[in-house]
Image 1 (cartoon, rainbow over the protein chains, first blue to last red):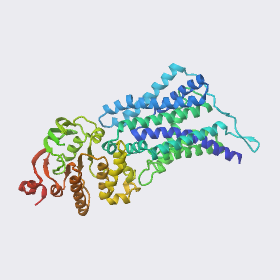
Image 2: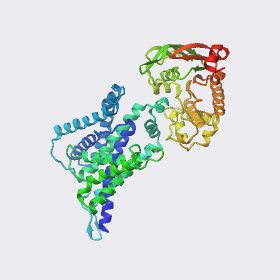
Image 3: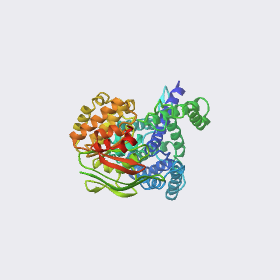
Length: 298
Length: 236
């Protein structure tokens, strides 16, 4: 019973972090139609900034805000000064699909090198703001701590805020319209380029938050978020890439699958499980398990 | 408020889709641009709305050049392009589709008023407000696309084949409505149509395009009588 409860709680914690990463990927996919591999670099660089601010200010919370603000700015700068010129120069042909994605891979390398120059390649640790010791349940310590609870709460609240933004505000309507049909949005007078940059900003902030919530349970180093990018990508594909709801649901499904496989079968199943899920979804429902007759993108 | 198009040239890929096209649309008038498939009608509208690059020549609206301007800025300046087919965002509700052109407008009271006017012009949209755009019939989508443009309180309306794929009865209804609001709202309209007969019947003037060039330019009345136009485009 304890094992079962622990597996569920672990699934929620990891699922919450995957959800932030998959949301970041989906936000960029919706606005730009590319998979942004640089997301891992953006998120980890934002976390380094959050780490510095945490150390200097003594407050983890100030660090979280710094990481999110920096992530948002970095996302905007990348879209405005890196992606937009690339898209402008490519007129069409097969390179149209590939060049921007390859560019994000290059950018990932650049960002990680910058981190290496500034902070070195060593492992640093970021202290959690609350205890990372497991709660005690029926007299036994379980693998779910107050910090894990905080991760779940933060991810949930940010998802709710994002949902309200998308569904209830004018900016959200502009974001959805630009994602579904940039041309109709433009003809309606919506500044689609600006809205796209905003999508990159939101993704950057989500990545920064993911980093600040993940790193205290791990270590901070230039490649620290690479693995999360992979899980976030798998979750996004499970959810159909186009839907924010799908991104979160995909992340939870992945979180549960990995948590149960590792606690009931073998610790070694983390990666195999993720890729088995990916392949199964692609074989059975390549458009994502939440795709109906038409894909849902809200 | 006049649209003046002078020796306009627009390329579509390697093809010169619009070749030295000139015409004028006076304020409050409806000009039909007719011609066969591939005549360059759609390209012409896409050039005028900023979706397609203008190679050379000029186009002015109220004396101001629209060449090189961005589509979203032209839209905000009152030039509304209802692009071909049923340009409705299927994933958004009818209400959200209508709201798109009001998002950037400062006068929210007037946006609400304009939306009410659109609903009284197309009552069916009022009944479908919370349905998704994708669930509408072809005719309803066309009404929604035109209605969305009207919420922006446009001065110049560019309509691309509103009759495409619709049943004859619905086409009549749409054309009658277009004529009605052009007159009541004092709108200037460029109506691109393959349905030459229907378009010329409600138009003040007509432009006949063939392979990117203007082959006839006259009042709609005269074009309807012109034997050459009748055999080539009206089919009788």
